[in-house]
Length: 596
Image 1 (tube, rainbow, N blue to C red):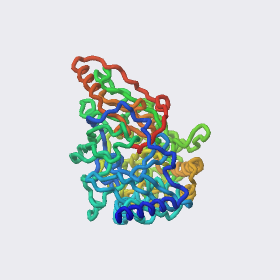
Image 2: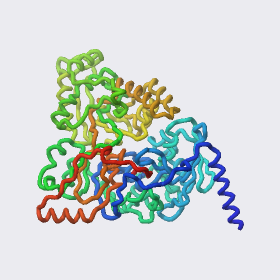
Image 3: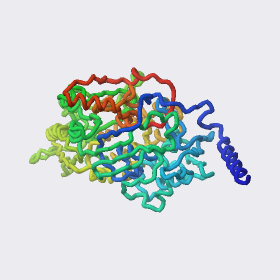
Image 4: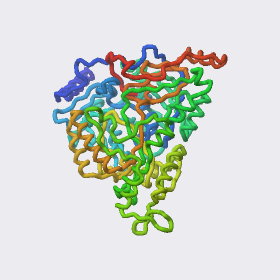
């Protein structure tokens, strides 16, 4: 009776805490429902081997913030909230309920009592607080996450499954910052060095657990049959593979060769030459390997030659503009990439449409204009060497690269640079060394690519204070007080339409400063896969790239058997659709789930 009384006391106290705000979620009419993107034909089992790059130096994505580390980390550890796969609305996950105060400063989460770690211990408010405190510890190399979570005080534990966060300022992203940071098990990691580079994650809460690691070669994940959330309606027919293998390669070319030999099951094509010229031969002609080009709503990122504005010669805007005019992007796309890409003019390409055309300067290839800009910057040719000089200092820089695939592009650039008297040397390093230099801003120019974000936020990339944070995203050292003011203003705008108007303003100012020589992008994800899988008609999720297939595809024994028979007999398999337009094949029918 005493225990029952105590339980009732705690229950009603928690209910009172959650009822304190008018903004309580999920709303009473919300129901967990099957994910409309997931196929009802999906079956669990089998294995998929995925070509990946950038082998992790740690499986703690808070200190190793690269794309593939985050992918693995996100399959092992979970967030307080999920995101509806069709609408991007927040939905319950580790937290079953949450409230937001009227002033948007106080956020209270109640954890799901069903949520447990793989060792059977419950996920608690202590875990949430400990994770937050570790990320925010100034001794820990968690720079990118500190930007998102730094607006909050250390959370207050209200009960075993109840936690409250108080923000120092109102910000539209506060809920996403809290709802989407992965929670770690305090009992498994407390007392250890959070900065330690390790590949061991023994206790998890997510659908997969680490099975085996071959450092720099592969990481193998095993599906957890005891995953606490596996029976949720919104997660049925997802996370189907028993085993997921990430195989790491030093280059796209090496990965492609391994794929053709059957050592990898799926290969995302980021090289136009491979897609246009090398998907030929019996395996392709007889449809044993399937080509897919998927157009969906995957946020568009950007890529370009990043210039370090902290030091000469790229601390001069005129020099940066000259570089932009000396990169013949049109010729590169036409002669090296089969016309398969569009030119970047923006750092936020998907902000623009017919109603909001992009007016950023295009920077066409123009040697005469580049020469004029360099003269304005005070450079003149040395009569002995032909190299431009200013106050006795030659206009020379190093291009830091980690991939031989850039050589043909840099050769064309180098010829144009030489013509105007600019000296470029190429410094090639492996990925780990390249990352160390990038973390320390130890470079002149490099090729950098950034993915788009579902929840667009310019702060970590373009805020002036981020230019001085090691291991951050503001690698160019961009600083602009007016952009800082715009970033500050957008924080309290909860209308995406109003924020987008500010982002276009920010984009214009950033583009005018030319921190990057912007290059190109594609509007579709190109995939090759052996015909051994089942998948939804959409192939990928609404907002995802090739990585989203790991949440929706499944191993199909019948297709695998038919493939083996066709290869043995030299027969042709039926052709699958090459082009898939998400909006054409998807019919929304409701449902919610965390994005894979």
